[in-house]
Length: 160
Image (cartoon, rainbow, N blue to C red; front, side, top):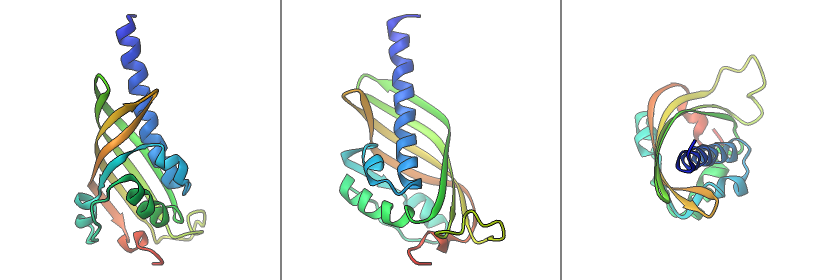
């Protein structure tokens, strides 16, 4: 195996780790972990997904706005994100990635209760640009579109 191949494999693993930090930060309401996945000038556009389920949500930028909006909105929910089908193209210190993120959301404290049926389950397509920041990668731009949705979209609204 060549050094170039090893570097590419390491970069792809680091890009996947960035996506996992993003998702885990949301799932655990961990602002520090979530912040570690984003550049200072990050833009997150959920409008392709949210408009399909009848919700209005602005494009979020920069990182402080993204964290300030998403951690309080998603962090309290009983949420789990699963990232899959990661396809990454690396070009020096930049990368583009497309993947799926399945996310299950329950109102706070209701996820573990088997008799609860009010939820929001979505399969989203992530399209992102990332940049290398030292040994880590960070998301500069993330656009989230919905492949499908089932459940109650109001679960995603504060105090619903």
